[in-house]
Amino acid sequence: MNMQALMRQAQQMQQDVLKSKKEIDEMEFEGKSALVAVKINGAKQVLSVKIENDNDVKEDLSILEDMIVIAFNDALKQVDAVTNVKMGKYSSAMPGLF
Image 1 (cartoon, rainbow, N blue to C red):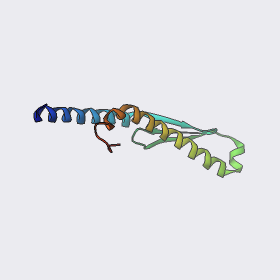
Image 2 (tube, helix red, strand yellow; image 1 turned 30 degrees about the vertical axis):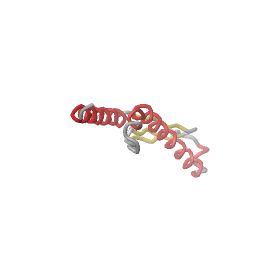
Image 3 (cartoon, one colour; image 1 turned 180 degrees about the horizontal axis):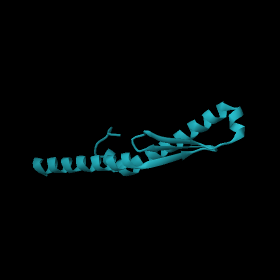
C-alpha cells in the first residue's frame, strides 16, 4: 500500500470517527431510579432531572440524594455502552483513542 492511499484511509477513518462521535453527542439517555429520572446527552451533559412527588422522600433527603446518584450513573453507563459499540471499531486501529 502506498503512502497516499494510507493517508486517504487515515483521513476517511478520522471523518468516520468524528461523525460517530457527533451522533453519540446528539443522542439522549435517561437514567432512572425509584423516584428520580435524569436525562443526559452523549456528551455527558445533564439535560434534566425529574423527581416524583413522594411524601416519604421529603422526610429523608439522603435517600433522594442516593437515588439521584443511581439515576445519573445509569444514564452515564448507557452513554458509555453506545460509545463502545459505535466507536469500538476504531479503537483497534487507534489504540488509546477512547
